[in-house]
Length: 223
Image (cartoon, rainbow, N blue to C red; front, side, top):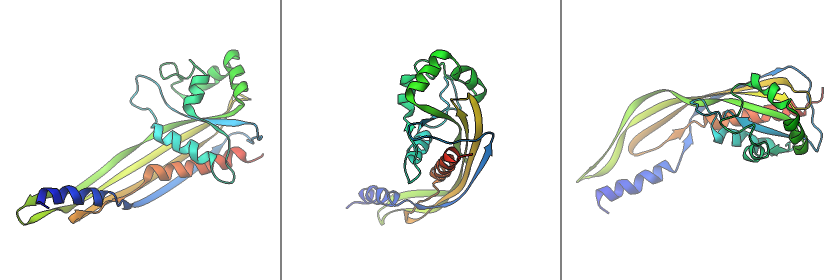
């Protein structure tokens, strides 16, 4: 195998072994009213989808929260975001969707919309805002091919911050019942002596898991 082929062969193998970085996560809850769900009732988890906008919530995070809330021994019935938007067309399309949570009461109180929400069996609407940003990075890494062989040398480090807030609305009463915030900060690093070894901090996944677990407890807690 020639040196260039060796580099192409080694790098995918190294990158396919993502080891864990360091993650610190916190979750906070503010309750404004009592909650509880019956077996036939459902929820929907929505992210900010206004256009044009630079502050949309990632589809992947919303899907992660929805998926995790369905699972486990205390899982709840969750309507898929796309299914919900199609059923409620055109109220929650990107160009007509509410921009802020303060716009929700007026929208969900409209008679035609309220009728469709009743047909869906929707009890709670969870509105998520936030994102994951890279806040710091450092180090350097170089890869080279020589007649003696090929490899990478150096050390990279970077920090990501995931910060999300979920506002929970009771569709039946048309009022906010509380908020859940989930934050995760993690440092990833990649040392390389011939072959780079990535240690990836799964900050968004950690924030998702924490939020989903707290939301399930929050919504199913009677009184």
